[in-house]
Amino acid sequence: MSSPVYQVFSGYIPNPFFKAFHDFVKIESLGSIVLILAALLALLISNSSWEHFYAALLHTSIEISFLNTEIKPLEFWINDGLMAVFFLVVGIELKREMLDGELSNFSQVALPTLAAIGGMVLPALIYAAFNWNNSTALNGWAIPSATDIAFSVGILTLLGKRIPLSLKIFLIALAIIDDLGAIIIIALFYSEEFNLYFLTYAILLLAVPALANFLGVVKLRVYLIIGVLLWFLVLKSGIHATLAGVLLAFFIPSVPGKYGHNLLHRLEETLHPWVAYGILPLFAFANAGVSFEGMTLGVLWEPIPLGIILGLVLGKSIGVLGFSWLTIKLGIALLPDKSNWTMVYGVAILCGVGFTMSLFIGSLAFTEAESINQVRLGVLLGSLISALGGYLVLLYATAKNGNPIFSKNRISN
Image (cartoon, rainbow, N blue to C red; front, top):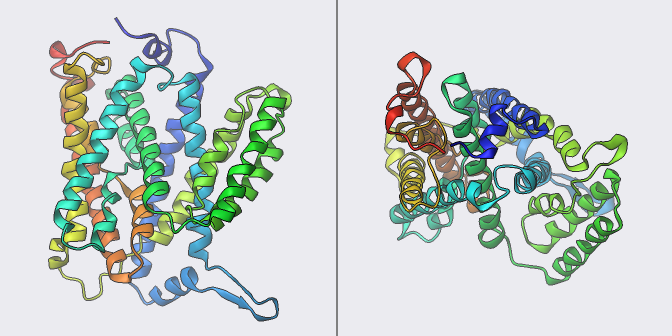
């Protein structure tokens, strides 16, 4: 018998959360196309006569001598500024799922959580194995641990009704938990030396939105003003500034605000299209540019790109599938409704599409141009192989009349 959450998403029980889920998938699917176009544009420009203009646009800061200050380059405002909004949306999605979605109780959260853990640990171990003797290269151990929710969901959506809704929910929940893991990794391992002065003020500032929640304040601008101040303090504290977005998300109340709309949902609905169609494509444009000048196929055998490619392609698929199998065999969870192991394997391969989060962690792990280029090459190739592999496996698994094969052997929820 199917669990209540799958009945809700299948339309048996009317629930406003179904619309939010449908809108989420639609935006992620279309956003992935814009993301690909932005990445391709960056690659084309990086290998053309415009390459120097591209580099100057992203990396040039402007000094204002009479104010004794400088305006940070565009790359900073994209990676440290706009990406904070992306992490705010990630935090909102996570909070929404925890309150009334797929992460709201243990029976629903067990499978995607343990699968996500397997999909983070094994890729990191594979990368570390190839870079163990190089302490600088080892800094990138977390790069292949990430999953790009926009690309993975977008590819899954290409198969349409062939894919059971429960499997889409499983992938989205897994990717959100994966994002949470990436956030924790960034906070613990990719932050600079802490400035206790600003860190203390950032922690104290969190008491303001907490108090606003207690007093029932539902004016969105109050929380957004606090968010800007929090971003500045977190930036100065040495913790990566984007984490301010996640912290703010957990203090935005999920209660009716102006005109009766749920404040948390309204902010997500407002920001999500801007993130999917604006911020993430800008990030891809700024971080996917790889110059192939002087590069040979031999570079793929270098420890950094090889560790990333194998981590994304093998580590992710084996880690997600292996931990899913173990979780189900131990009786902790059940296989998603109307699915089979071949389909779960296809989803596990799709989790190797790291792209946005992998590039983001790579930008934190390395500063040298050569290493950054190797990271970008590894992430692009690993993500491409995972995308094609996952799509083909899922196409095969659902080939018979558009329905899952091997269905008689599946375990139903």
